[in-house]
Length: 628
Image 1 (cartoon, rainbow, N blue to C red):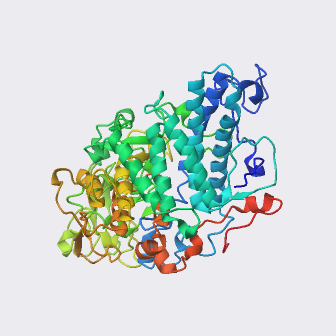
Image 2 (image 1 turned 180 degrees about the vertical axis):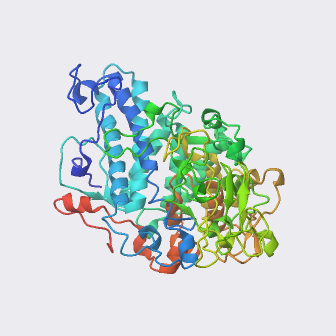
Image 3 (image 1 turned 90 degrees about the vertical axis):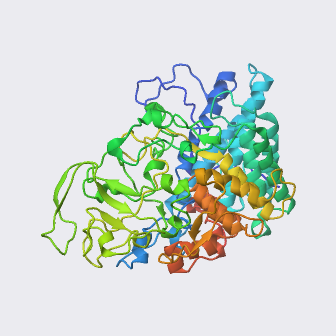
């Protein structure tokens, strides 16, 4: 394995920040160094190295908010409005990440940004690795823990990078000078290094962190399970994987479960910021809603704070991406266009749509039995102000209706209980009788009546799972943590490993692990057989099929469906899951209307293009991934 220790992207700059002068009131552009401290005379002290390790964690905020390369273009999320293509809206244009065509190329900003952020973090962690041995006023035990925190974070970023780009640069020492020389390391060697580092982390990190949020033994075990699981699938025979990796993945899942440190929260809803779906009757404050974000089920989370001064991510970045947790605001379904909700306020906040739930996703759930459907989706919108003489039916301007604060203005019907008769619909339809608009799942995102302006056009339920009430209006400002690893996923990884041939599961077969997660989601209906759509992609088909696992029916596809239900919107991971299991092409073409329509996705797109700046700034020029 050849490692270029001089690897350095000119575009990244030094990628290091001491983050120690927070009390300075001068403009940060002014040169002012009252202590004459430099990296060389500060990072050789215990305090300096502690500050350096702490500085490795906030950058995860910026990295995990780069969701474009993890969610759109999959089976459950699209970047462009799926309703536009389903209902043939003229002039509709797909996102490159949904279409998988020549618009998905090396010049896209999202590709450059994620690459830069990952390598900033890798170099920051490498600075810890390179300098910690020289620290003389720090105990050997403290050095060991901090060193392996940095190695864990480096492994996490390298794991994301190798899945996105395949063969990648793998610097393992601090970069201290600019260089145009870039050496790519084979993916199999990256995986070997990940496992070496994470095995060391497992042995060195404490079971419980000294400060909540730091990497722990359990976090290393979780990442080992995911790395072994991914290597076992052995993408393009390039990862050095063998069937034994699946057994290793299962063993690490069992270690986490047997530790007892990360029990499943009995009530799925209590994992998330607590809120009422009716903002006019909201008992929760911003602080009280996230009191549970340290639930034992969470193994590792990106940390946020109620202190606004800590909201921003890496101050060396030109664009401050991480202005607080923004999970509440990036999954579409904006209620702001509905009557009575026209004013942008913190009540519904700013539901932008870089990730939109595909219509088929709603149909993966049993809306009556599965508590995740009720919690995850906002199935009604209420008026936030009084509205008089609202005209719900453009073709009948004489028809008006009034709404008071708190009145329902839109009702989204469960896919398996659609409104059928005219009198079950709202006044916005000819023959409708309900005061509010009623929208069926096969009409989510629709334009109706065809060609007629309608205030409800394009409407679909918000992914409300992460909603935090009482925070300021804007793109971020959430204070709850962003969970990356939790034990609900551990059971599903174990099930996947067993389906792929792993043996020796401590709980039994794959169905046993799978049903542990399912029964938590069923609550009082645990043990029952919930029904999802047999053909989720056919929006008018009401045929059902059980999604309870048995030894005879459990497959990778069943597990991928359950991962979609359990982990929807979490952990910047859906694209990685589908790529790992070899199901990205089939599931995206089946469930993502844009990808199905374009029909251009091929195996080429299982690797992303390397960013153009890396190609342009390297000498000799680094080789681009095939097909780009």
